[in-house]
Length: 253
Image (tube, rainbow, N blue to C red; front, side, top):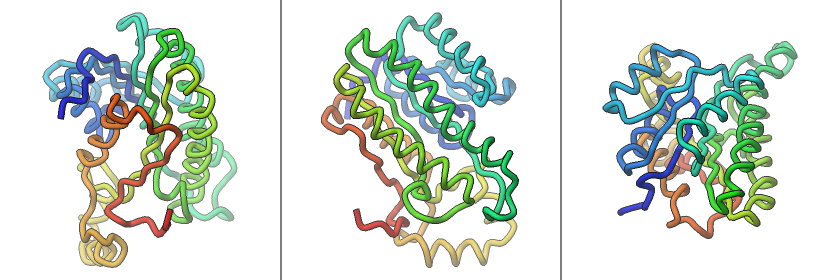
């Protein structure tokens, strides 16, 4: 299917590895002009090389407000406009609520939530001038129900709520905002890969007991949904949080 993304200017945070890298690869295959942002410049360069040099790279600490402003300014300098923003950067820390220091809650919110809020606001300022655009926030099924570490769960829940709030405002400018909530995704740089290598019996039992599809998801399966939501094929989808989880979520709506 031609998603009509050729020539679209796409910025992806956390785009040098894992799900973000997979998203960048699919957008690039669709002919989009892709920019990826991450902390490690060497990893960014490696990803650029692996994708055939078709992407622009932006070394940035996404948790720093000043650097976020510079990122958007640099992307717009290189591409003039932004058509799609994918807020993918994220991660978990801490353990139980009682055992987790407050600074880790702040760090989790800065990485998983405030970075997306800030970049979305900056992107909308540009998108509304064009009268079109798409923002997609990568959240988690554990932002929609209990599970995962508390800091991560809380931040992703906030991001899902923000997605709906911004979506209802931005659609009047022609800008669509949605979120994708992956379940357990297996990739080379992820925690599930490490856990599987450390204790295959335990993790394989988890898969069979907790994921009705009977396997982990792939980055490509998440990326395919993201690119669809970014396209005009999804023109009437606004403010949704879409699970991509092989049935793992226990929600019934």
